[in-house]
Image (cartoon, rainbow, N blue to C red; front, side, top):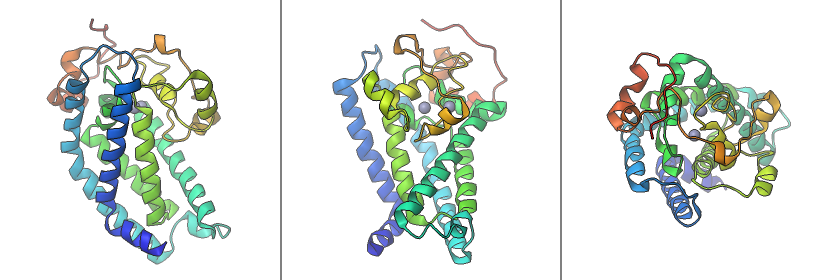
Length: 276
Ligand SMILES: [Zn+2]
Ligand SMILES: [Zn+2]
């Protein structure tokens, strides 16, 4: 087991990237076989979203180094909430507790990104995709990438989470994020059961509806329990869901990489009509 963690410690970036690519490949092919009938050019759509990897890699790598340094410091000083909960000697209980804590942190982060106007302008780049499929997962403005990682860094610092916990949790998070953006849906009965605890594609698609109050619901990252607890859980039949953001429905603004890069720095807008 120690060897396993040692291996992960020194190959985390490569391992994460490989697992991400593997899950992305599987999801892409599941969409091809069982995706919802949506009239769009999948490769063109993916080509736009894939460009966000270029600007996302460097901040992600830099923040990854900061994560490791922070975890080394908290480990050396036994600093953080998890060090002060003596019943957490069992690694399984420790992992579940840390996972729940970190997932709650993601929920808070997501609510903040929607409620603070300046931050919402960055997050809207992800939301204004006019079709949600697995490549939408990649669509994140580099400034949001840095903001999100700063939140995670603070959470790691205060929780005192160990490297293997953060790493395993990141793998679950990456997989879950790809799955919930898939252009597929669970059968309603299965969704009713799974979404009691976890975010599903059906649940996250409601979050991508172009208008409030649906945009401001289903904030959960991996777990849906926070939305249920804080009254932000909503359902909407698939036939009524329109992907996008009412402020950015014109394909000129949300249709090219450069315009999406500039989008958060433009003046705030009023809701627009939907392009046909
Ligand atoms: Zn959101
Ligand atoms: Zn999303």
